[in-house]
Length: 187
Image 1 (tube, rainbow, N blue to C red):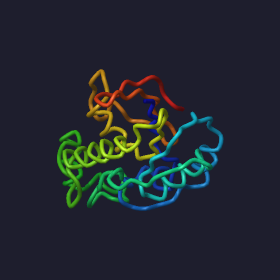
Image 2 (image 1 turned 30 degrees about the vertical axis):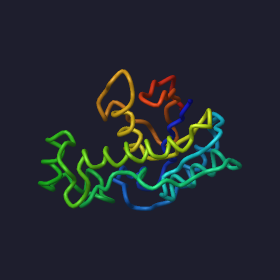
Image 3 (image 1 turned 135 degrees about the vertical axis):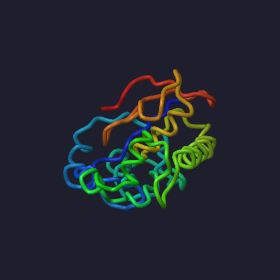
Image 4 (image 1 turned 135 degrees about the horizontal axis):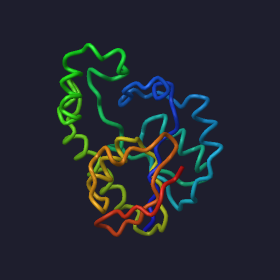
């Protein structure tokens, strides 16, 4: 089956380079305009994170398409760093320690990388198993969620941060029920 992993459009928090995980913020005007200017592939079925920014993106890209909202596909819980940017955190000792760990430490009062990946992988496996009769599925989700799924399933194997993708962009993939092969980018 073909799977399109599409990161939601831009939000105000994205423009300000903030850690926006559990904050349920909507798309900003420039994010909406950018989505409308793209030409996205057609999908037989659409799966979205429950967050506003993903649901709005899915409705803009696939306005007449059947969609399901799937819990577990949300972005990482950034804990104490939520809603803040580098400038606001650069003097925070916990933040500096987290940076030094290259993102391997858990977010204070948030999720660890391991917990986040486990949650995303389970949600992907559960949701994709419901769609076996479809040939082309679009996931409208978060950058971190895409990175977690790709880190687990994509071949050739790469690290989490190798799968970063810009807002409104994504990956065209082939999924054989065991592994994901990237066939191109959606930009």
